[in-house]
Length: 395
Ligand SMILES: *Cc1c(COP(=O)(O)O)cnc(C)c1O
View 1 (cartoon, rainbow, N blue to C red):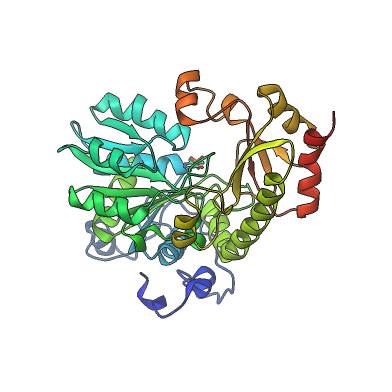
View 2 (cartoon, helix red, strand yellow):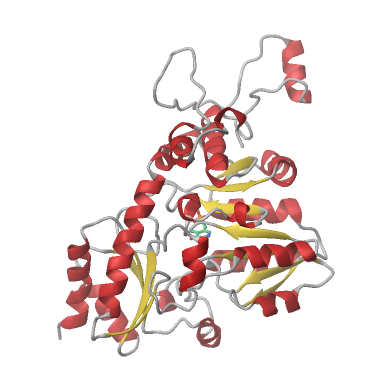
């Protein structure tokens, strides 16, 4: 936690944490587009490089705008340190590269971002890191998959696109009983709705590309955790390998954090209304949204999260053609696999985000051809309903 802000609450931290005013007395945070920094003397340069004197050296690993974003997000997640990265995937890669070595084992939820499973199975495996994939909500399955080489447990909650919710506290306890770290990709909830570190997780990952930006503009990511694991190990990898966030993107994200809670509450409100409307719609077979009382982990989500999130999925009557018809009949909602935007997005998981899986893997994961995912944005709820109804109620 940033000591200078320790006394403040979430909304104040979101607006103020990490800002250091320069001699120009600016009100808004400045962008520092500079690759290097100038030292007052050879002795000062030597002291900076040796780490004897703190301060900026080179923007691969020290930039004031990036630091402001890191301090602000660390404060919001309740972590000691945050390391910003060039993308969500490079945040995950940096965490794996910093904390794993040949022979190590990872237990991961099966229901994670597709590219994250490709990273584990196609790339980490090349370096002798094995992964066992388990069902997110089956605690027994997690326990059985852990072996003496297991170093990390990895998950996202709620899952995409079926919105299953994991018990973070129980999985953190399990990880720690076996000397492992629990890594939570908190992209879907953001710290406005869920703070995994408070529930015992060791590391929080973000794709800042999604809700932290919130308006679909920049690619970025972050790793949050304690001084030792994130401040030393992950920082050491970032400094050496260079998957660095640009100062411009950091500025966009830190301004995004200022309105994060307000936006997340509005996303949740719209998603809840849309889920209830879909649930009552005669052409809809099933709605997946943790805010519905019928959701299997509704109670857990209510306890663990401050809101139920902005993403929902639903199954239409029929198969692929029926799902595609709903998508193609929309006139306003964007057909794109991205999420976390003020603009609502709609996607067909079976042929896009989960298209690389075999039909058997898709069936195992519960991704049917009749499934449609909506990341609910901030448009008027009646316009959203009408846009979806075009493909549902008309012949
Ligand atoms: C998008 C996403 C990522 C990857 O982030 P990028 O910024 O696209 O690299 C990781 N995890 C989740 C849950 C995501 O939605």
